[in-house]
Image (cartoon, rainbow, N blue to C red; front, side, top):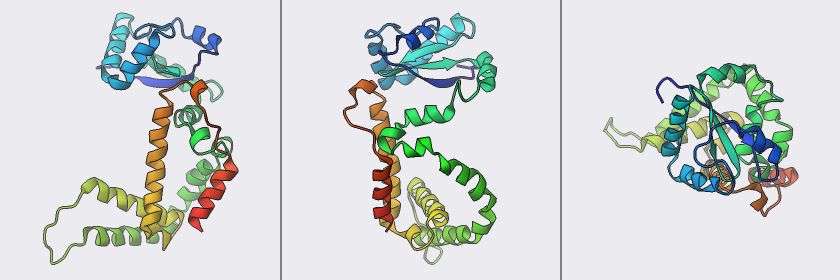
Length: 237
């Protein structure tokens, strides 16, 4: 793996789309490239990713930097070498879209709702409005960081105390972020903070599970955006 910069591009692939499969036929595969024989490698990729990728890098060395593809149960993952990065940089959003790949990988339409994908207003809010006004939020952020440290560490008489580092830092970040998003007193509400954490973890976990199966096996409909809005409104108010 030394000297190789690799990137993954999620390419939408299913057994219904033979044309897309043909487009990838020229790329060497780890394991068998035909379905359903490739499913064996798919299961191995889930259980032992490092081993499968190591076989892929052997292909790179054999074919002098050529890309290779790895099967999952519902798509192919194409891993590229350094010499192809320039092509990725020059591609347009119509050809390769990081946002679309992320939405598809996280199964946003199914787990959160299609509205956040079709109308990604939150990106401009975070990139423009929030970033430009961080100075205005600084006093609140500073106060919340200080309050979070005081409450979570609960140090007395300068005595040493052991604390769970990861969970403590995670709690401080959650409270500080929410001090900007929802302000006091909600940003310190333990039920609200726990809900935020569980939603993030549950969505990531469920997306990983869904990505193990072909889309044809999904037995539920996409979550209507209005239902998600009503649900979140109920939680807040």
